Length: 463
Image (cartoon, rainbow, N blue to C red; front, side):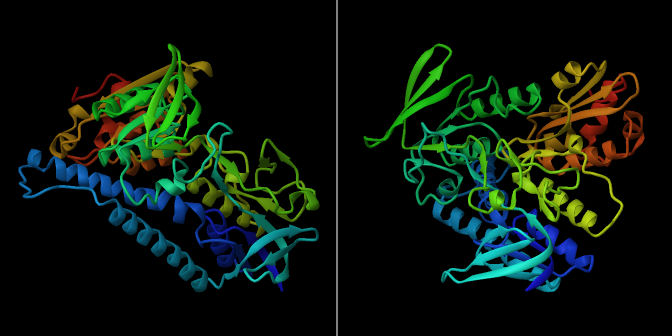
């Protein structure tokens, strides 16, 4: 069967590209070997947020008296029910993508796809039957999986990855989480909320190491306040799983430390899904585990494109989606601009939440900018005080010479819902003066953005 476009992978890169291509009049099919919606919908972004919502509700219940609410009886975490709810949410989102495929007349081809020369994909179904499909263009969007370290071989029981962490059937007494990026920090927070004794181990000097150092320090304070043990500048050297508990050998600046835990969760990053999909036969070039593409995601072989986690850039769902849209719009002949990777927001859904975009203060200084920095703490926010969640702040960084908004870094309640204001403002080349002069509703958390901008220019009112 001949298509205008074949897409290998139905994650947030693949399915969004398919729908946009269909909107542009293309005959499209998506090849998927597993669940529709990819890792994000089924084993990543969506089910983790469902679990984190359960943890948030549990925390509110445990502190209900602070809000003048009395709850009779025991408050307890039912992990199987939490997991069941998260799976239902994920399944519902996956069914939603299938509905969108039907609505937009996108064909779904279930099976393992192997790309072939001459813009073809060979699909093997569950019964072993092979069918060749052909297209004018092919987009590869096969995503990534949890990275496994040689000294942390996952057995799915004592040493686990994020998939097993999403579906545990009982609450362990103790857990070591290796890696404090978004995935590690979110799981560390979730299981700590359930009463697990959590030790978070980070190789670099600060947790969430890609964030501004002020944000990293605040999250570490928040974690330690919850009695989580945080070990930075540390690395797990080996794990002995022979006994009832794991014996985790951790190398620190002060020497080796041994920690016992029921479970070790490895959250040290991702590995791209490029093995066995036919890149070598087609002649598509890769570098350091990523497919090499141009600004519009075409590989070195005409007619073959790649998007998402398998290309260089942030491995984020919203990045993959925009790459897919940019790619198909270019294929359709539209005159479009390349994606600006300097204006990509990043979010971590711990409590407090983290959201950021642009340069950190350290990066701006290293780039040679003379900067103005403004910071507004949520302790001075009326909405944060009323909500009882005053941890955190908004920090903004401007170029002192021209007023360019270089970066924004937030940590606090609901900040992941606030960062889009900054992304749009930066895209429109908005200055601090325009943000200060834009009336923000009161009382809201978003007022802190306006106040932080005012602080950068010595005009802040409420601190």
